[in-house]
Image 1 (cartoon, helix red, strand yellow):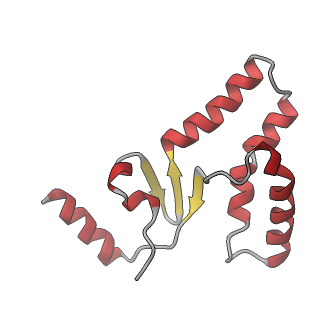
Image 2: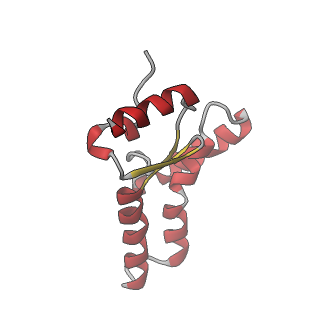
Length: 113
């Protein structure tokens, strides 16, 4: 049985966009990046730190098993450095396995019916 992606949960319908193998959780992304922007605007954190925090979701993408191992090692080391600022939280942008076209059509047909 294939694991469910976050976009297949009923409560996430319409909130997550999938483009190829990239999945974006819009409410969490807006909250995450918006919070960083507000913190910089209020001068609570310095812009270089904000850039590092904003890059954490990208670091998680580089850890995907399909990436070359040197890239995964560097991404893992940087993610370890980011742990104090929340790198272990749920990803707002993530890679998911491709769903066969036949299965996608069946999902759309079920929603329409």
